[in-house]
Image 1 (tube, one colour):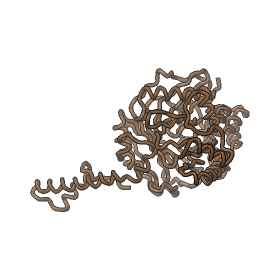
Image 2: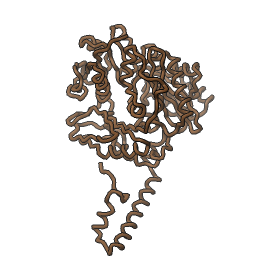
Image 3: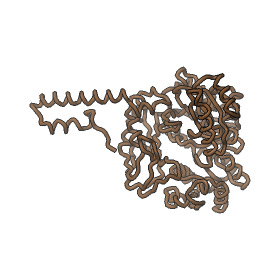
Image 4: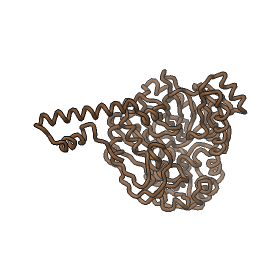
Length: 497
């Protein structure tokens, strides 16, 4: 058994604080690392100790494996937790930790390397009897091989980076004439983002649902899944909103997908927390997509519906302890939704930088906020625009949606643009509220032609109702009539941003 008394968190922002909180509750000290520009950040102030590891560019600080390991050793740490992003899926970090005598809170370098390469992961899935989206199982060697694959599977197809994620190195090809240029673009982006130019090709499923299964596996042979998360609210392959459980799954389908996820983990000899991602078509057929060998951004929604603290379980597994629960102990309770709050323009989704001049955070029943910002915090272009995650729980999905609306209306961030207005719009959209949505929902929310007609009809009805009420009251003035129509409950009240 590995005794862990002090953990270096090789990350920043809200996820670093999330991990440090789990450590504090377990009686474990935490060490933060930071770049020059992050010197006064919240995660630095929250940690028991903090050390600068380089200049603002991540390639000179947060991505420096040597500095992370050196700092862990110098500060007397027993273990390193990578969080997500940065080095979280770089096999070099667990390998370096092993060489230095440090415990890596995550999977082995071998498992990470296997699953980090999507073509290898697809071959593993096939061998394990898990259905995959039709496509190549090896990286494309040239455009001729890509053209041959397109001839066999037909258009449209999806070009994907074999060694990446986060929507980078991905291109949809709908016309054969665009295959060559798309392949060149995807290859260049993959090389720049992941230092790996390999691209593979698979059939493009039109508007599926994106459903993932959270899995935990210890070193004693216990592999448990924590049900699913719905991640279909995406823009350019970037997730914006997640919820658990999914409206698309019943008990039987959940069991089958959960078992497929367990098979993937067992086949790759994987230990610790991981997520197996699937695409689900309208007919109820699901296809293996990839395995994320790390903690996920959206892990809180799973925690809220199962009661399992995933980060604490990660630490337990790294210590050599068995899981604190079995599959039979997992019981889904209620519904949870997460909105990713990003420093981006809510319409164009372009990054927004500047100083946060005012901050008012939501709270109250069923609200959980994981944030890396504070008043006076300067948002830069050096790092991911994710600045906070707003998560709510409700006894059912309707209550969760109502609670998220309320929490979003309470949330105030001034000095920069954020995606809060988009999330509020999503929570009020017919598509999301109905639960009958897929990966095309963002386009419908951004261009809600049907909702525009519904809105106009609601306004017209409210005006008519107001006029009728004025007559009944013996003739109201124009001023008092519009005061009444603007009140909450009359269909015209909207939060202003």
